[in-house]
Amino acid sequence: MFKSLFLFGSLVFSYAASASCDLSISANDAMQFSSKSLEVDKSCKSVKLTLTHTGQLPINIMGHNWVLSASADVKDVAIAGMQAGVDNSYVPTNDPRVLAVTNVVGGGESTTIEFSIEQLSAEQSYKFFCSFPGHFAVMQGDFKLI
Ligand code: CU
Image 1 (cartoon, helix red, strand yellow):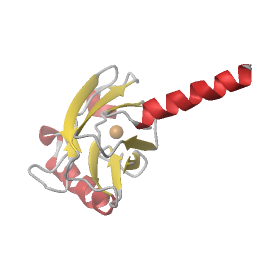
Image 2 (image 1 turned 90 degrees about the vertical axis):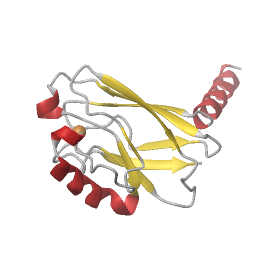
Image 3 (image 1 turned 120 degrees about the vertical axis):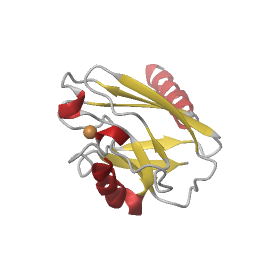
């Protein structure tokens, strides 16, 4: 009986998680995101994402942001972001390859954005990453519409 209750509970949980249009992810002082993959329901018109920096290092040493682009564009957008510099939150300005971006946060801070996914396709491959200089190679993950 306990086993079936547990199973029921996890089914409810996974349904709730997959149907959500709200996402949250954290990043730490060890240059890691808390998740390697994020999923949203393709019926979501917009997605609300909260990035929390759970570390303590200051923004100029271990700043993190959350950038969304097509998988094929990650490297080029990250390099262009590095060149755009701190004044532009390490993201190229007015660049259509940038599908969503948060502010850069330092230890103990968090930031929330809401962005439309209506122009995104479930057939296309997307990734999220941090564009703080030197971070994108390890701080990235898959973004899926399911
Ligand atoms: Cu980072």
